[in-house]
Image (tube, rainbow, N blue to C red; front, side, top):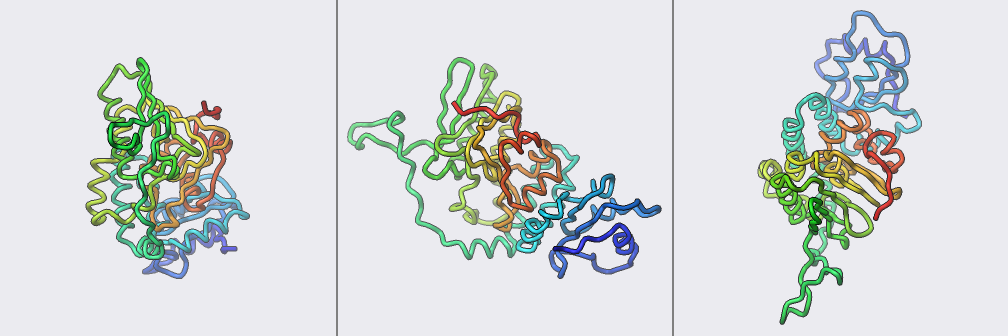
Length: 345
């Protein structure tokens, strides 16, 4: 169990003229745990001091400005899962909480720029490099085969062509958008990413589309970014520019008031980061949600550091990312991450 600091302990640390902070990803102590239970101290702005710390700050108990300044609020019984993740990726954990603090009150557009720059920083960092080196790359995947009802045979081609990563079906003023990589649990590849951008641009440009609904084909909505493509960008700086040009969240912002998502099964990483920008998000009872990026030495990079806090707050977003734990559809509804639980049709 990590040692929790009392408010008096914090006051002593804040008053000490130390050259180095009490905790940092480069030091022995990677995080601070604050026991916010106790009387407030006069003349010491501990909340402001806590928000300046270059490490995750975890709060236990209490209420008021001290607890509000913490990056995540946890029960003592759940502390170990957060601290273990932080110990494994302290640089990514610190960048995450610094980003969430900095973008809490910025515009969404400015927040997306900051998130992309933070993500690019970590792509050049040692934690992502270790994960990438340890991961054995599989052979390039084959294209998804078309389901029978979607086959578009041509003379001489054997009757089948690769399945498109995104299926669009328009009925009057309604557009159905379906993620269509079921063999790979709708992992968001570059091809699927670009198709989503184009689909949202199409909705934004056509005012006669009054509603667009995004769903996923197969067992789940999406397991997030395609891990087979992680590390394939030429360099982190170019990766940032690509996200500036081809991030689905940016295109969705132009038409989000007319777009809804219905989620089912696994909704990991981008599989919830992107939907959280929409006006309405529903989920099947079997849906579950998770932010696994810290285990790769990264942070959510599909807009989740901006979209999730605006639905569930900075502290719950940090808890999801730092713990890496799943939450159910029922818990997501209670938090406001989704708007309703509905059966899939």
